[in-house]
Amino acid sequence: MILFDTHAHLDFEDFDADREEMIGRARAAGVVHIVNVGYDLVSSSRAVELSVRYDLIYAAVGVHPHVAGQVPPDYLEKIEKLAAHPKVVALGEMGLDYFRDLSPRPAQKKVFREQLALAKKLNLPVIIHDREAHGDMMDILRRDGPFPAAGVIHCYSGSWEMAKECMAMGFYISIAGPVTFPNASRLKDVAARVPEDRLLLETDAPYLTPVPHRGKRNESAYVRFTAEEVAALRGMEAEELARICTENGRKLFRLNSVKN
Image 1 (tube, rainbow, N blue to C red):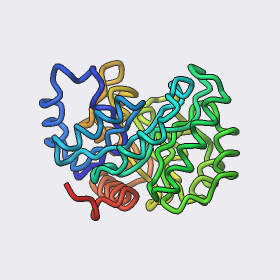
Image 2: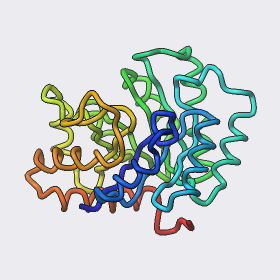
Image 3: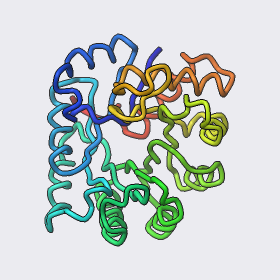
Image 4: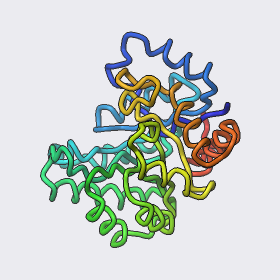
């Protein structure tokens, strides 16, 4: 299987004890690309550092809604500087999180919209975090689009109707480990219906570990279990599904033009 983990946080301390071995397991599982996604300015910088150390890792830089209320006044300038690195392929993750509400919602919206504007300026795709904020997230995308470099709704959790509107705006739909959970009927339905050319796979490691490792730390090698589940839902061979999703990721993140 040829796999692309389009969203992971391998710079997190969860991997400090065995990062090298974990990346080796990903390679052995068939993972050829990983996008390591920034959470704040510090983790965005670490993401760039990881992309330099490992040929299969690329970086996204940005500010998560959890920390939107704590950004320094010059955070956009710092993101733009990080984004100039040749292995940075996207801005993110950015968006809205009304589940944990760790930053005031006005601050979340402001920082989200500012990063969307920066992505348009830099012609980079965006990685969007949306948790229990579907209405406001869609309102912002409608108001601030179009987005010529497109992007992805990561760890998709919305309805099929919302997915169709996101895809009409040019976004990809990324499926993570929860699709393997027995009670994830709505997500399974979306994963079965998204057109082949709009589908991506991810782990969100160290979070959202798929069955059969649910309850343990997630890692990039486990993206294969998500691929197998999505393929089964679509009546496809897992190898073919993985190949298609890998090509989609290469197209979105323009990896053919990235210089290691």
